[in-house]
Length: 365
Image (tube, rainbow, N blue to C red; front, top):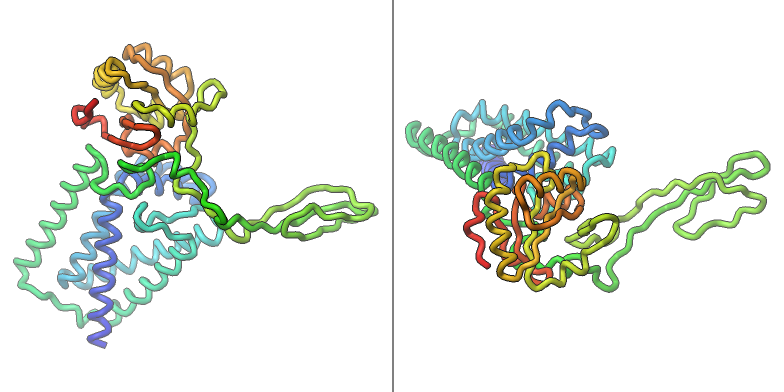
């Protein structure tokens, strides 16, 4: 039992630290995932949505600290009880998400490792079993170091997490795992390889035949039903097809699609603000200076937002911006850059520079 507890202690501790640090690298991304869970139609807890970022920060810091404390053997009873409570909650959450197909990616490892809902649930069940082993063998969890050293390491871990979190929130994630990282080409990210697996569906066709309802199930083609009057069809996804890393990316204005045209521009600056109503509007004073400089050097500058034309035109007027805003899906914009607003510089669809609005001076034209 002693050796089994030792194995579980190391495995669970390291996994919690890795999972926590990946999410701590991108707390905004984790907060967006929590907003999905809090939204109506999932957990239906919309009153938590304004606090999603604060909850995300607290959860990931606790996750890292619990992993560190478990490895150190610091406050073992409190640590194991906390781990058990956390994993029971997340096991329920991933089961709910998988069973009802509410959230397609739990965000357990941020954008670094994508897990399907059932994979996430399986992972949590395994962790639950390992933590139950720790709970049963609690007496075997002893500190490796003296109390003062253990406290110092735990306190240093807490301070380090807070400093790191503050840095990435005011700049950008230290490591970008998303398909819009610097050097990525957006056009290539949208391509679907030849022979890529296609989605597989089952279709339940409903007909009225001589006054009675008849359902015919097929895997594709419209069935022929003698004397049947078509009523409805129910589609069930059996197997997902290949989805390119970059999807739902468009650049539209007044109903016209400019995506292909913009991604061929050799010198393009994108000012991205997924929701102008939530943007730090003071940043547009600095953005105006930067974009005026870019235009003077031959760059095409566009704004990209999911907000309507009215608020876009108002901000353009108020801050005397020398560019128009185009429409793009909000989730896509949140994925592109963790800053509202943020700025990208592209060359024929390849991202050359990407900065938070606090780092505009780092741009070079």
